[in-house]
Image (cartoon, rainbow, N blue to C red; front, top):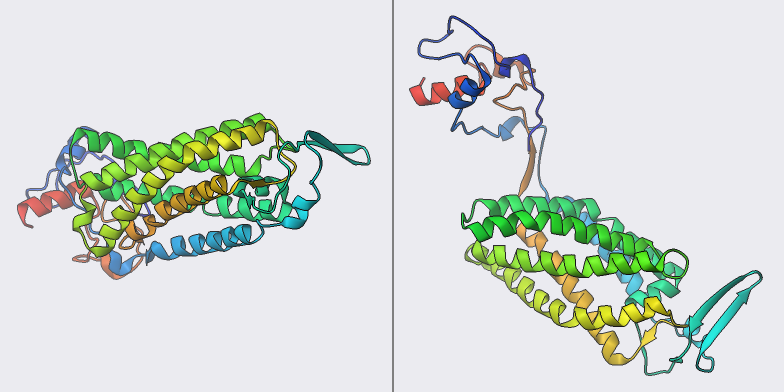
Length: 340
């Protein structure tokens, strides 16, 4: 990363006399680009404004999100709420003065039923609030992770399929994260059920595509050759992707019915509940492995050797013979080639 402030030193200027023998001054933008071709910039980490491992802010955001996920799970099993809706089969209308709610009570609450995560989120206010926070808080960090991982993997393979899939990961991640945030915010009963349905369908397919593409590019990039943690990362990704692929169709089909005719409680048969739990755990585990993938990445905000951040962070560096005496990238590249 770099703090880039363009100054006059990088602008194309026409000079008839070069200050150093053998150094050519460009007369056009194209000539300037040709002269600086192959230049590798020093990150100047010794005088960087910022220099830290990005895993720490990512861990902080993830930890806060996990806390609210824990609060969401801890409030799912609310039998008191469910017992209030034990009525004969059919539709039941609850009246609150001039406000009423209509729910489908064709499946009455029974003790052997288990709480559905998304249904209880719809039925209980505190659970809904905790779920929203857990989904919305890490949005920026999740998008940032997707971009970082894409850039880290970009140079590890040149095959066409790798390049295409690696470039597709970011838009899929954006669609997945945005749609998950929207269906967490938009409720079925009080907002727009069809929009909720649309966002959930988009999330289901985007999550599948994102997980599939990331698994493929991780294998093609051979990250499993790096170290033991990298092997764990790709293994967890593959297992989580398989579990999600198996459990998601049944869950989303079941939840579509709930959106169409929402029930009087948020409990489902045991198998449907466990299917949903496995799906969410697999999804959570998959994205948690990204913390392993970025563990060595640092965020460095530094004064650039080229393209013009010439203000004297440390005046000594800009004095004659100093580190930044020459600030133009085309000039620096020629000095490297000529061994000056």
